[in-house]
Length: 77
Image (cartoon, rainbow, N blue to C red; front, side, top):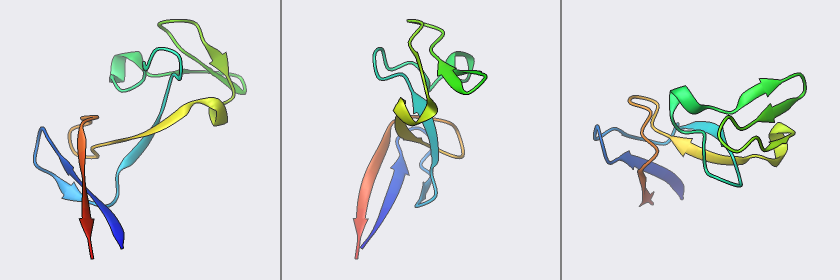
């Protein structure tokens, strides 16, 4: 069973989403203007100044067409 996603904004459907790093403390990261900033080997949140390795950041899916973070999971057989 593969996971398929549907975008609530543009109606896109598919299984290949963009995975982005999101701050685990405040949730910043989905807006292109407020992405986590790369600092040498770490990432830093521009909102709350959380800083750690990219592996410590939350990974969340995003629509590859419009960049919306609100995706619906569709279970397909």
